[in-house]
Image (cartoon, rainbow, N blue to C red):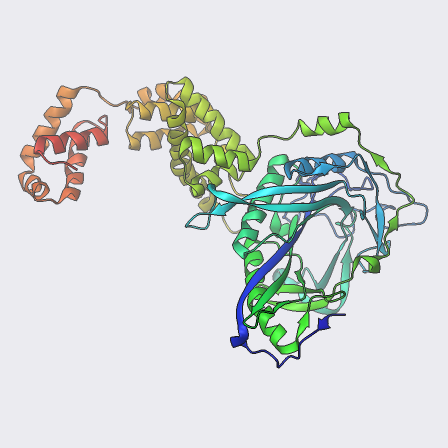
Length: 555
């Protein structure tokens, strides 16, 4: 029971000096194995099984089942090795110790979507434990930035278990895709038995923004490891903050509020909103009821995305209420040093390391670095393009900036164009088109950047060439050859450029006087006229510089 050491009316809002947020996180990660964790039934969390969002690829309810999932008499679980290794990968990435011996336990509780009336989980011998992850501090725009420093978040454990099914409270499939509320629940067991990695942190978070930064970094890490597709709208990653407050009173006393666990948040906005709401509401609740942290005081709440409030669901069980005991059908699993090391060597460069490298070596700001780190394929594409630019003569550190500009400007432009071409009848790709999927090769990006860096093409020509190299007809063409074919190479004839500039200045004396008077923006029209005379072969930046030099005006 919750304890109340103070009558509700003893304190008023004016008695509160300050409050301190205390927050931990439980995260459920659906692992993308081909089959479920204890059976050979197909796993809906793996798109390689052919499951999608359209009606033709969505598996019918209760079709991904077998005797083990249904808990039929005589059926026995068999452990999925891939699920264990995926869990180990995450454990290594989180700095955890991977247990030499681990076991599975029965966690007993009854829900209609849990056929066995217990969940196979892990209790006192988790697969991974005792880790930590360094979460970057935020910059002025709220972006995680490793150059600003870190906060260490402890990881208590990361254990493997099976997911439950899904309860629906509306009838699907009405006219026009509408649904109808019912006074009963519909059970879909397709998700039941899917491998689920539960990660439990220490209560080390002190702000909602810090929690969101951790959630973003964890999602990037799990996707980079290839252990989950991480589509949060599908519930493939579900975040459950455990929130309470230390209320510091002016009389020197500190009151600790009961823990609230907000269940199944599947967006970063919801994580931030739920934590900030609880941080506002818990002092008010404490002033009303006087309840403080104690055994049996924990409650679970849901999050309403419409009203931006939490709502009470139930009192939370303590560990002994689940009646854990070792599952007699699953033997103790021994993980020797050789197996552990084989898995460890599969851990790639992690997003946080890339983020640091892109910020420190290439001078990218935090937002640019995160845009390139968020998807592993994009990060690898970026690194390959940098090497291509270096091979073409661009200095290493400078190559990082040149290629980043190409991808985040010219590449992002094409990504947005393709997104805009979708019609309402087409199924949207939840992850969207990636820069690495545009059709242009990383080698071509690097060489294109080198052409621009050497002044061989203008910025306008570079954009045109980037678009052409995304087309299948030009995908195998060298950027230099394509620039030559299209007459896009910059003319390096200084005498010709000076002649064009002097001609334009002579024909536009009023504009020249405006520029001399300090109206530098007027130079744009003169640059445009010179570019026309050159047939687009001059470099606009060099033209601008030459015009200002001839006019006798400095930037």
